[in-house]
Amino acid sequence: MLAVLAGCAVQPPDQAAGDHPADSVMYATVEEWLDLQQEVGELGAADVASRLATVDKSASTGQLYYYGVLNQQLKTYGAWTVARDTFRMLQADQALTKQQRQLAGILRQYNQNRINSYARQRVLLNESAKLQQNLSDSEGEKQQLAKKIQALTELEAAISTRREE
Image (cartoon, rainbow, N blue to C red):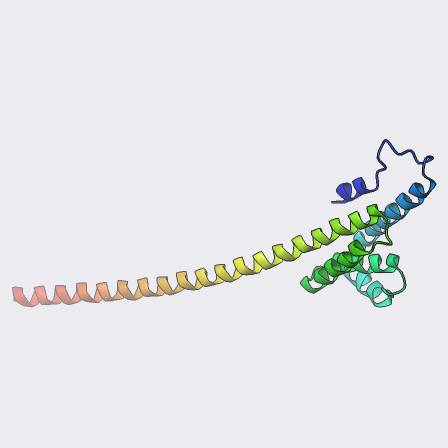
């Protein structure tokens, strides 16, 4: 994932950094965002939670990005939805560079995929639980039928024995 995101920061070969001075600043910001994402990726859940408590997401787009990356790092459905929505806001922000919006779009899609995957997993787990219950019910019915067959076999044997006498 990080390699794909790093590709967003690579400058196209036809644009030399010297041709457009603003390009080097623009790419440095994306690189800083990627560095920040890597730094957050190395944090534990407790550190992420404590940093989330101190983020002022209304202060700047950098802080909003940081807020999204922190939420993305958590392993909960709710945090992923917050991260997705945060990156959606960044993706729509026309004040950001094209590369920053692209990075935000990639991260928005990544979190949406996590959300979708989680939802599919929940559906499959529910189906699995229902199937397991059906199997358990069927095995119970099978045991009852086996007992009835055994009882009928014993009754038939008893009837045969009485006829012989």
